[in-house]
Image (cartoon, rainbow, N blue to C red; front, side, top):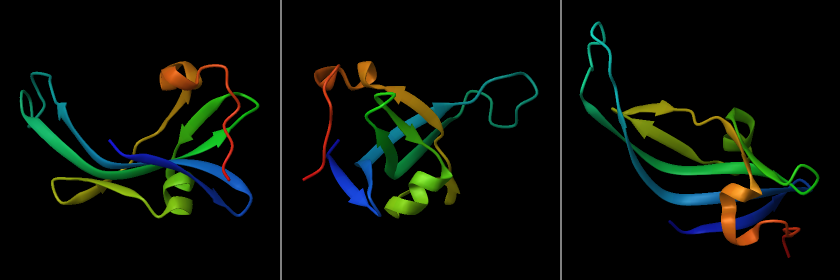
Length: 97
């Protein structure tokens, strides 16, 4: 997946483009049980050197003008990913130039 760093209003963001993932729902009472749901689009995460983590949330999507869709509707990705999850930059300070 192509990605790049962007500075928006003084904050650094990691933007990942062309995301294509699928979610498998489960559970006996779930109407979508055992159905793979495709999710596609792009996602932006606020990247902070202090905690060395990328935070995906509604505010980071809004700031980077990114979005994901599933079944024709917008969906949200939320999570905090430490640089260990970004393996090749582990322990490095990331900057945008």
